[in-house]
Image 1: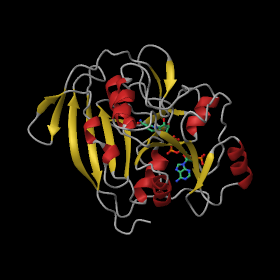
Image 2: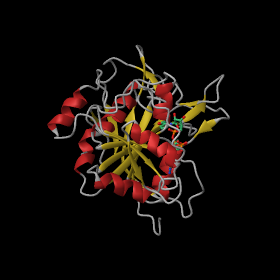
Image 3: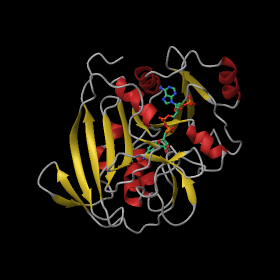
Length: 306
Ligand SMILES: NC(=O)c1ccc[n+]([C@@H]2O[C@H](COP(=O)([O-])OP(=O)(O)OC[C@H]3O[C@@H](n4cnc5c(N)ncnc54)[C@H](OP(=O)(O)O)[C@@H]3O)[C@@H](O)[C@H]2O)c1
């Protein structure tokens, strides 16, 4: 992800998907309106996704989260470059709080090579969530109280293994894996292993297969798996029928643009993947002047998924 997806006031940092600025604690106290399930009710923003207890699910819990504009843009081409970035018009600290709450419940974050590429280009902060900054730092304490490791492990999914790992990254600070296919370039595998990365194989060719990815991580004790990469990884997870839940924020803005990403990228799904609405919250407070909907969708079983 092009770093974090929030733009606020202070320093530029990453959280894998969007380059964002740290927001400060303001703007977290206004309530949400729960629209579904049940009769509409005001509820606190903080804790609304923590209540899902994804780390306690009785089967592997694979989930993902995106913020999109109403015209479906999750990223736009950055002016003057070929890079795609989460639009500043959609990112906001209240959505980012919920992104962090999801990260707080993860045993492992599944990300893409973009994490290392952004770091190498100085476009990313030196860490993935869970953030140690206010107004998210309470989530670190929450993890410890839940008996979780201080930070989730990180699994970087890559077919190319073109991972420019900057020297500044401390690979010992949390468990780091690279997941690739058995057809991956052996020279690149050896070079990553020399750097101290654990390489897992989860596919016949160079690409990673959804079911094998999930199984390889579960085998290492990582049952709650938060996919924070982008639309290609999401396609792998949906097509193989392993995604269990999609958290999708719609910022009430239309962005247009001709170069953009949407939630899913890959071959058409036939049959389509069906999702059932599990929860819907309306946030009148961000993005300012527009508002947003926080949707939670349960994925229905996909017959015959590989
Ligand atoms: N708005 C939002 O909430 C949001 C959230 C996430 C991402 N985004 C945006 O989406 C755009 C794309 O994100 P992204 O590039 O991180 O993610 P991505 O589209 O999921 O995939 C990027 C890379 O991940 C690897 N990959 C994905 N699936 C794989 C598989 N099945 N097997 C092997 N490797 C696989 C490949 O790496 P290699 O090239 O190394 O082989 C691929 O090039 C970015 O602009 C990002 O900002 C937006």
